[in-house]
Length: 451
Image (cartoon, rainbow, N blue to C red; front, side):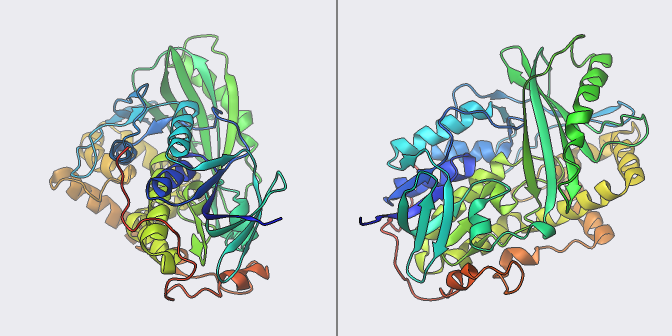
């Protein structure tokens, strides 16, 4: 039986994969979108889409009607003092964030991609074998396909990345998040540096976000550094965090957690080479999660669009173009924030010191505007002024004290032999990133973003 051929097979229909499939389909490419889930489906997340993500949704013409303004973020220290971080108004992004449940957001983006022409298969990608002119793909339903390119948007534990030798788990900056919905209301998103013993904050943070319809999204995100062994700690701590929120009036007494879900995080563009040959990784699969406040939706969608654009505009050197696009868009901040995250997770006393300093009454007014820009990765496109100047200063201090590089090397480096040892990497590396166009996608040269 002859195997079906697609210009691009996209593994995973979360924000990264769905946006990639949407952009490719609108450009005229033949796209298969493979995801084992049937939509709508739930996903562990804080449900907040930052300003860059809001701008991208508007550009694509797929802003969810049920999305509601998130309001300014309140950063709460271990002593329960808080500082309000307003969303800044940028030149390239709006001065607001939106709350939309992942069940709704992912369903909307998935539907938009399918309506644009992407084929959908309710199956998981089982294997990828890159070859010089194409990639051979096997799905969990037994299907065998051929594709000019494969986009792995299948999460932090990406099967695509593992299959082609791009995953380097021992070099990853791991995290784990656990969330549940509770009945109630909260006026603004709260990020809490919670200290269960009253002294040392957990190696991460807790959150209390509005979820609409008299519901609140409550969760804990923990930094695990290079090992995933302590992820179970989130489940043990979450009930105590809920009780602490009740005692502070952020949740009503007797709150019961519903629909608890957890998920792995890989942050700071770490733990993988994001593209090689005919395989590109996007979203969580590329380690694109903000190491400081945990948002990954905006980064996921932006990387999905960048992967699609690289394939459409430079099919002969898509991996090269995509790696440089990621480095330009995310490299500096992810390197700085990742280094800061590692320092905080490794040193409990430093976590307490920094959290208390950021929320102290004598410093919070001066630090809040700059922190709101840098913390949320909004320096690029920020308007000139005192807040931007303070954000630049904060970034410089982080680089100086942590030794963070402006661009992490693994984003630009091609995979080297001997790291993960799989023979399939040799197939992936036969295609020269700077070679003339080979097995070109049938996609149009100009991407039309109109809905």
